[in-house]
Amino acid sequence: MTEDPRSETTRDAGGAAGGNAAGLEVPPPPAGAREVFGERLGLAKRYVGWLAGAGLERGLMGPRERPRLWDRHVLNCAAAQAGIGHGETVVDIGSGAGLPGIPLALARPDLTVTLVEPLLRRVTFLEEVIADLGLGVRVVRGRAEEKAVRADVGGADVVTSRAVAPLERLAGWSAPLLREGGRMVALKGISAEEEVARDSAALARLGFTDARVNVVTAPDAEETRLVIATLTAARSGDRMGGRGSRTGSRRRGRR
Image (cartoon, rainbow, N blue to C red; front, side):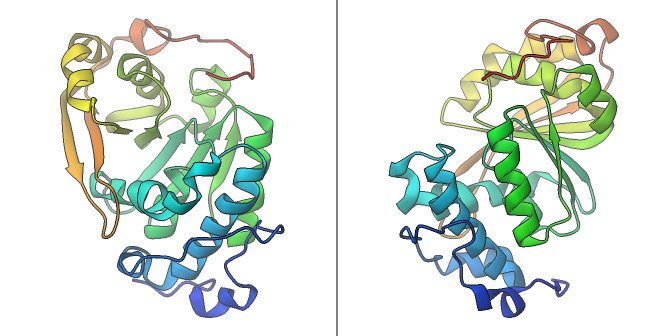
């Protein structure tokens, strides 16, 4: 892996606290984290410090998640890199606390990552984290279905997401942000196969083909189920405001 100027050796002088000003307990990284993040393990530790501190204090993470931040969240999200090629552009929609976009950017410095998030308090958190870690990651405030967001971040190789919406609606938001031949890579739970079977017709209407579930695992992490589908020839009506889309809405509330 290419040496990063903000690698573990240059950034660990400040510890792994990140935004954890209150000194809340930060779980130590499991052994597999070094295999995933390499010289950027120090940055990953700081990110976990942000999640365990400001992330919990501001309600972006639940308090029960603190002991599971590495295996259930950070490493689980980093495993999604298995569905992303070298040097691709990645748009993470409904990024929340930065999952999966920030772990992907940490594990894969070759990627160009943009985080899309509508809520100001989350955008503020993301901008603070990115500045602290020195990552070349963009944050765009807005919803994936908004025209301004489509104009700003459209044409991506990959659109990713985690726990954002049912698959049909998620595909409707993802399609307009992808180039032809691009892929939706959605992190889903144990019902991933059922969602693909249920929504296969809707995905086809949107122009997605070859929808499948890939189960991948990072060392010392929970299994990650990726719903991967390729955008081939979307119908313009579906892409610009099909079923499940709220094109033009400017509301900033929760999905």
